[in-house]
Length: 275
Ligand code: AMP
Image (cartoon, rainbow, N blue to C red; front, top):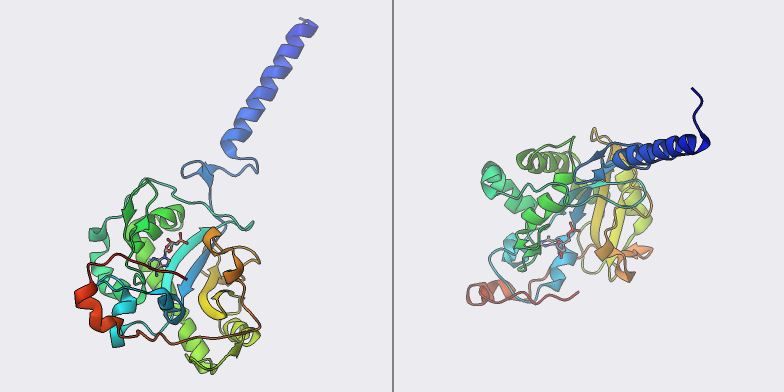
Protein backbone atom coordinates (compact mmCIF):
# COMPACT_ATOMS: atom_id res chain seq x y z
CA UNK A 1 0.00 0.00 0.00
CA UNK A 2 1.43 3.35 -1.05
CA UNK A 3 2.03 5.84 1.79
CA UNK A 4 0.88 9.42 1.48
CA UNK A 5 3.58 12.10 1.25
CA UNK A 6 2.86 13.32 4.77
CA UNK A 7 3.18 9.75 6.15
CA UNK A 8 6.49 9.32 4.30
CA UNK A 9 7.72 12.66 5.69
CA UNK A 10 6.69 11.60 9.19
CA UNK A 11 8.55 8.26 8.82
CA UNK A 12 11.68 10.02 7.53
CA UNK A 13 11.49 12.47 10.42
CA UNK A 14 11.15 9.63 12.94
CA UNK A 15 14.07 7.66 11.47
CA UNK A 16 16.32 10.77 11.54
CA UNK A 17 15.33 11.32 15.18
CA UNK A 18 16.15 7.69 15.97
CA UNK A 19 19.55 8.00 14.27
CA UNK A 20 20.30 11.17 16.23
CA UNK A 21 19.35 9.39 19.46
CA UNK A 22 21.65 6.44 18.67
CA UNK A 23 24.59 8.73 17.84
CA UNK A 24 23.84 10.60 21.06
CA UNK A 25 24.12 7.41 23.08
CA UNK A 26 27.22 6.18 21.23
CA UNK A 27 29.07 9.50 21.04
CA UNK A 28 29.74 11.54 17.91
CA UNK A 29 32.70 9.33 16.95
CA UNK A 30 30.64 6.18 17.50
CA UNK A 31 32.70 5.24 20.56
CA UNK A 32 30.57 3.86 23.36
CA UNK A 33 30.06 6.36 26.14
CA UNK A 34 31.41 5.10 29.42
CA UNK A 35 31.92 6.58 32.84
CA UNK A 36 29.52 9.41 33.54
CA UNK A 37 28.94 10.04 29.84
CA UNK A 38 32.66 10.50 29.13
CA UNK A 39 34.23 8.33 26.48
CA UNK A 40 37.12 5.97 27.20
CA UNK A 41 40.55 7.64 27.37
CA UNK A 42 43.27 7.23 24.69
CA UNK A 43 46.49 6.99 26.68
CA UNK A 44 48.09 7.46 30.11
CA UNK A 45 50.39 10.27 31.25
CA UNK A 46 52.49 9.63 34.33
CA UNK A 47 53.06 13.09 35.79
CA UNK A 48 56.17 13.40 37.93
CA UNK A 49 57.18 16.41 40.00
CA UNK A 50 60.59 17.80 40.80
CA UNK A 51 60.44 18.57 44.56
CA UNK A 52 63.37 21.00 44.38
CA UNK A 53 61.18 23.27 42.24
CA UNK A 54 57.78 22.52 43.76
CA UNK A 55 58.97 22.98 47.36
CA UNK A 56 60.22 26.51 46.69
CA UNK A 57 56.62 27.63 47.13
CA UNK A 58 56.56 26.35 50.72
CA UNK A 59 56.06 29.17 53.22
CA UNK A 60 54.82 27.27 56.27
CA UNK A 61 55.19 23.72 57.39
CA UNK A 62 52.93 20.92 58.54
CA UNK A 63 53.36 17.19 59.07
CA UNK A 64 51.64 16.24 55.79
CA UNK A 65 53.99 18.28 53.59
CA UNK A 66 57.03 16.26 52.47
CA UNK A 67 58.88 19.50 51.69
CA UNK A 68 59.03 19.92 55.47
CA UNK A 69 60.90 16.68 56.15
CA UNK A 70 64.25 18.46 56.44
CA UNK A 71 67.07 16.16 55.41
CA UNK A 72 64.47 13.49 54.57
CA UNK A 73 62.64 15.71 52.09
CA UNK A 74 62.42 14.02 48.66
CA UNK A 75 65.40 14.51 46.36
CA UNK A 76 64.10 12.49 43.40
CA UNK A 77 61.16 13.01 41.06
CA UNK A 78 57.99 12.20 42.98
CA UNK A 79 54.61 11.17 41.60
CA UNK A 80 51.89 13.70 40.81
CA UNK A 81 49.49 11.22 39.27
CA UNK A 82 48.63 8.87 36.45
CA UNK A 83 46.27 10.66 34.11
CA UNK A 84 44.08 9.05 31.46
CA UNK A 85 44.14 11.56 28.58
CA UNK A 86 42.64 12.03 25.12
CA UNK A 87 44.82 12.49 22.03
CA UNK A 88 43.22 15.90 21.40
CA UNK A 89 44.74 17.36 24.56
CA UNK A 90 41.65 17.07 26.75
CA UNK A 91 40.91 14.46 29.38
CA UNK A 92 38.04 12.86 31.25
CA UNK A 93 37.65 13.73 34.93
CA UNK A 94 35.66 12.52 37.94
CA UNK A 95 34.27 9.50 36.12
CA UNK A 96 32.59 7.57 38.91
CA UNK A 97 31.37 8.20 42.42
CA UNK A 98 34.04 5.92 43.88
CA UNK A 99 35.14 7.92 46.92
CA UNK A 100 38.73 7.56 48.08
CA UNK A 101 39.17 5.19 51.02
CA UNK A 102 42.67 5.17 52.54
CA UNK A 103 42.00 1.76 54.13
CA UNK A 104 42.00 0.19 50.66
CA UNK A 105 45.64 1.16 50.12
CA UNK A 106 46.91 0.59 53.68
CA UNK A 107 49.54 -1.91 52.50
CA UNK A 108 50.95 0.65 50.05
CA UNK A 109 51.16 3.62 52.42
CA UNK A 110 54.92 3.44 53.13
CA UNK A 111 55.74 3.54 49.43
CA UNK A 112 53.16 6.22 48.73
CA UNK A 113 54.43 8.47 51.56
CA UNK A 114 57.90 8.24 50.09
CA UNK A 115 57.30 8.35 46.35
CA UNK A 116 53.89 10.02 46.06
CA UNK A 117 53.96 12.54 48.89
CA UNK A 118 51.89 15.65 49.28
CA UNK A 119 54.15 18.64 48.73
CA UNK A 120 51.67 21.06 50.25
CA UNK A 121 49.87 21.72 53.51
CA UNK A 122 46.64 22.64 51.77
CA UNK A 123 43.92 20.10 51.10
CA UNK A 124 42.85 19.34 47.53
CA UNK A 125 39.37 19.67 46.11
CA UNK A 126 37.61 16.43 45.35
CA UNK A 127 35.06 15.76 42.63
CA UNK A 128 31.95 16.36 44.66
CA UNK A 129 32.55 19.77 46.22
CA UNK A 130 34.55 18.64 49.24
CA UNK A 131 38.19 18.67 50.24
CA UNK A 132 40.56 15.79 50.85
CA UNK A 133 44.09 14.51 50.59
CA UNK A 134 46.26 14.78 47.48
CA UNK A 135 45.79 11.01 46.92
CA UNK A 136 42.01 11.36 47.19
CA UNK A 137 42.10 14.13 44.59
CA UNK A 138 44.21 12.10 42.17
CA UNK A 139 42.09 8.95 42.54
CA UNK A 140 38.73 10.65 42.28
CA UNK A 141 39.62 13.08 39.49
CA UNK A 142 41.92 10.90 37.35
CA UNK A 143 42.03 7.35 38.69
CA UNK A 144 38.30 6.79 38.30
CA UNK A 145 38.69 7.50 34.56
CA UNK A 146 41.29 4.79 33.94
CA UNK A 147 38.54 2.17 33.50
CA UNK A 148 38.60 -0.43 31.96
CA UNK A 149 42.42 -0.74 32.20
CA UNK A 150 42.42 -0.05 35.94
CA UNK A 151 39.26 -0.96 37.78
CA UNK A 152 39.70 0.00 41.42
CA UNK A 153 41.54 2.27 43.83
CA UNK A 154 44.07 -0.32 45.05
CA UNK A 155 45.00 -1.31 41.46
CA UNK A 156 45.39 2.36 40.51
CA UNK A 157 47.92 3.14 43.26
CA UNK A 158 49.76 -0.16 42.83
CA UNK A 159 49.98 0.30 39.05
CA UNK A 160 51.31 3.84 39.42
CA UNK A 161 54.04 2.72 41.84
CA UNK A 162 55.05 -0.12 39.52
CA UNK A 163 55.26 2.12 36.45
CA UNK A 164 57.17 4.74 38.45
CA UNK A 165 59.75 2.15 39.55
CA UNK A 166 60.07 0.66 36.08
CA UNK A 167 60.73 4.02 34.39
CA UNK A 168 63.15 5.67 36.78
CA UNK A 169 63.53 9.18 35.39
CA UNK A 170 65.81 10.43 38.19
CA UNK A 171 68.24 7.59 37.56
CA UNK A 172 68.25 8.18 33.80
CA UNK A 173 68.98 11.89 34.25
CA UNK A 174 71.67 11.25 36.88
CA UNK A 175 73.40 8.76 34.61
CA UNK A 176 73.34 11.30 31.79
CA UNK A 177 75.05 13.85 34.07
CA UNK A 178 71.97 15.92 34.89
CA UNK A 179 72.39 16.16 38.64
CA UNK A 180 70.47 18.39 41.04
CA UNK A 181 72.22 21.73 41.31
CA UNK A 182 71.42 25.30 42.28
CA UNK A 183 74.07 26.68 39.95
CA UNK A 184 74.06 24.52 36.80
CA UNK A 185 71.71 24.95 33.87
CA UNK A 186 71.16 22.05 31.49
CA UNK A 187 70.05 22.00 27.84
CA UNK A 188 66.38 21.08 27.62
CA UNK A 189 67.14 19.06 24.47
CA UNK A 190 69.74 17.04 26.38
CA UNK A 191 67.25 16.11 29.08
CA UNK A 192 64.63 15.13 26.50
CA UNK A 193 67.21 13.06 24.56
CA UNK A 194 68.32 11.22 27.70
CA UNK A 195 64.71 10.15 28.34
CA UNK A 196 64.16 9.28 24.66
CA UNK A 197 67.30 7.13 24.59
CA UNK A 198 66.26 5.28 27.74
CA UNK A 199 62.54 4.80 27.10
CA UNK A 200 62.19 5.33 23.31
CA UNK A 201 59.46 7.93 23.75
CA UNK A 202 59.38 11.71 24.05
CA UNK A 203 58.46 13.16 27.46
CA UNK A 204 56.77 16.46 28.16
CA UNK A 205 58.37 18.98 30.51
CA UNK A 206 56.74 21.78 32.47
CA UNK A 207 58.87 24.54 33.97
CA UNK A 208 58.43 27.20 36.59
CA UNK A 209 60.77 30.19 36.39
CA UNK A 210 63.33 28.27 34.34
CA UNK A 211 63.34 25.20 36.61
CA UNK A 212 61.87 21.82 35.74
CA UNK A 213 58.65 21.45 37.74
CA UNK A 214 57.08 18.44 36.07
CA UNK A 215 58.12 15.71 33.68
CA UNK A 216 55.45 13.57 32.05
CA UNK A 217 56.00 10.12 30.58
CA UNK A 218 53.26 8.77 28.35
CA UNK A 219 52.05 5.22 27.78
CA UNK A 220 49.70 3.24 25.62
CA UNK A 221 46.99 1.38 27.48
CA UNK A 222 49.29 -1.64 27.77
CA UNK A 223 51.89 0.61 29.46
CA UNK A 224 54.33 0.53 26.57
CA UNK A 225 55.95 3.99 26.33
CA UNK A 226 54.67 6.39 23.66
CA UNK A 227 55.33 10.04 22.87
CA UNK A 228 53.45 12.62 24.88
CA UNK A 229 51.41 14.42 22.22
CA UNK A 230 52.35 18.06 21.78
CA UNK A 231 49.96 20.29 23.67
CA UNK A 232 48.43 17.42 25.56
CA UNK A 233 48.85 16.32 29.11
CA UNK A 234 49.21 19.90 30.28
CA UNK A 235 46.37 20.53 32.60
CA UNK A 236 44.59 23.85 32.61
CA UNK A 237 46.26 25.13 35.72
CA UNK A 238 49.61 24.62 34.03
CA UNK A 239 48.76 26.41 30.80
CA UNK A 240 50.35 29.71 31.55
CA UNK A 241 53.70 31.36 31.02
CA UNK A 242 55.18 29.11 33.68
CA UNK A 243 54.55 26.00 31.59
CA UNK A 244 57.12 26.81 28.92
CA UNK A 245 60.66 25.62 29.46
CA UNK A 246 63.53 27.80 28.23
CA UNK A 247 66.37 26.23 26.18
CA UNK A 248 68.44 25.81 29.37
CA UNK A 249 66.74 24.67 32.56
CA UNK A 250 67.74 23.93 36.14
CA UNK A 251 67.02 21.02 38.47
CA UNK A 252 67.36 22.85 41.78
CA UNK A 253 67.87 21.27 45.17
CA UNK A 254 65.40 22.42 47.77
CA UNK A 255 66.81 24.56 50.55
CA UNK A 256 64.37 24.42 53.43
CA UNK A 257 65.52 27.71 55.01
CA UNK A 258 65.05 26.36 58.51
CA UNK A 259 61.37 25.54 58.01
CA UNK A 260 61.89 22.04 59.33
CA UNK A 261 63.11 23.35 62.70
CA UNK A 262 59.92 25.39 63.00
CA UNK A 263 57.70 22.46 62.03
CA UNK A 264 56.60 21.48 65.50
CA UNK A 265 55.55 24.99 66.43
CA UNK A 266 54.08 25.86 63.05
CA UNK A 267 52.26 22.62 62.34
CA UNK A 268 48.87 24.22 62.96
CA UNK A 269 49.43 27.03 60.50
CA UNK A 270 47.38 27.16 57.31
CA UNK A 271 49.15 26.86 54.02
CA UNK A 272 50.29 30.10 52.50
CA UNK A 273 51.91 29.13 49.27
CA UNK A 274 52.75 31.30 46.33
CA UNK A 275 54.55 30.45 43.13
P1 AMP B 1 45.66 17.78 39.06
O1 AMP B 1 44.21 18.11 39.12
O2 AMP B 1 45.96 16.32 39.14
O3 AMP B 1 46.40 18.48 37.98
O4 AMP B 1 46.27 18.32 40.44
C1 AMP B 1 46.33 19.69 40.65
C2 AMP B 1 45.97 19.98 42.08
O5 AMP B 1 46.80 19.24 42.96
C3 AMP B 1 46.22 21.44 42.38
O6 AMP B 1 45.31 21.84 43.38
C4 AMP B 1 47.65 21.43 42.91
O7 AMP B 1 47.92 22.53 43.71
C5 AMP B 1 47.64 20.15 43.69
N1 AMP B 1 48.94 19.50 43.76
C6 AMP B 1 49.76 19.24 42.73
N2 AMP B 1 50.83 18.58 43.18
C7 AMP B 1 50.68 18.41 44.52
C8 AMP B 1 51.45 17.80 45.53
N3 AMP B 1 52.62 17.17 45.28
N4 AMP B 1 50.95 17.81 46.79
C9 AMP B 1 49.79 18.37 47.06
N5 AMP B 1 49.01 18.98 46.16
C10 AMP B 1 49.45 19.00 44.88
